[in-house]
Image (tube, rainbow, N blue to C red; front, side, top):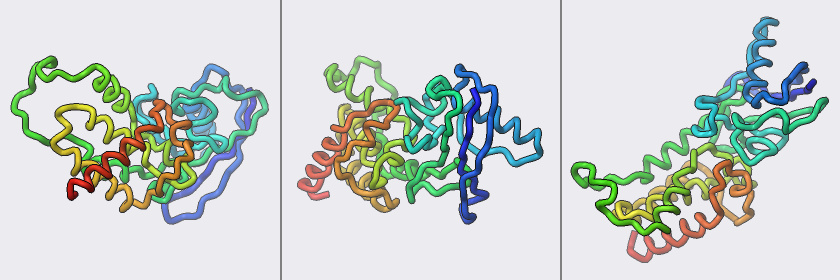
Length: 247
């Protein structure tokens, strides 16, 4: 395939960015999207030009690093991570516009790389269990109803990629926070800090500058791990309960 790539180039956080156009030939439909960018960077290196900076790590759809807006869609036209998106999703002669996440709490560092440490600070504010339970108990020592265990596991699949924020017109991270709150709130070990957790995580979410949720649903539609929209309802219920308890 022959593709025209319009890629956001930005030297650093303080510089102005703009789209640059590149032509790429002989792209295999079996390439992943990031492999296609690797080929482009090899071409740029050979020409003595600065390669395009983009994030990636596992390239297995696990780490959430590969955060790209592709033709205006978070991670591209398929419900998957960018590294698991293949070029067969595009056609010969297509023009593909590639941009970084667009959200104030995710400032651009260079080209397609954004700083998502706001998510780390939200987790640090309460997305954990710190109760000292001594040595690790046997896996079956604390009974957990299967329905709760399944839901906790499903919510734990959130990889913190930020697609929910990038897709939301408000730039809200409520789906991310809701997934983390629901994951721990379904487990007996998570009950002791349940109220503090939700209050602190929501406060940090707002402090970072993320927008409010207006139930548009683009976050769940873009989520590569298919986190359901109802975790935001759970987040709101937990927050109201915590406030009733005086937190």
